[in-house]
Length: 254
Image (cartoon, rainbow, N blue to C red):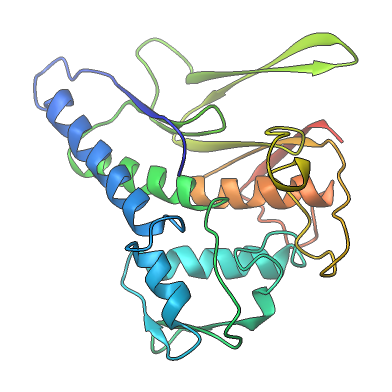
């Protein structure tokens, strides 16, 4: 996923939770998802999907099916502004009953970069909760985080976002409690393909993408959905009618 992951776990004063051991379990969970979801590794599970799904349906397990279910839902609800198939979302077939995924075209390939990091954070957070952790912050790079509970004597895990607006530094600060956070900045990574790492997948093939320097924060229960929606909103510039009511948006730059 090309980013640094960090965990902060509040030590259990009663010694019921071994924070170091549990933290290692969570890190291994993230590393496992990195190996499975990398599109750059020919031996990864995602590379297998990209090679196979046009020939036959690929069966999804109880962990990967919800990931693709959410990805397809956000593609639909955003009108294609978020698309793991990079413009080919209409050619993904997700079978709820058989729990399989297939491609209608043989030139289709998936990129989970805009949702995989959040998915890994959700899974790592589930590991911590299952091992009795009640207060922790998991962070993926500087753009995604999951808060479990809150630190002692505080109202939440304090998140600060610094950005430039008309050459004046402004800080956006908010508290997270049992909530996830995602920041998408259309103007970040200017050396990426086409000059940006967020492009409009709805643009017709052969046409240059139109860039609007938007920056948006999304908070909500799931890190993978927050990641997907922050990407979609960086493209759209506004919430669509189908935007989920349990999530909140703040545009820092439109």
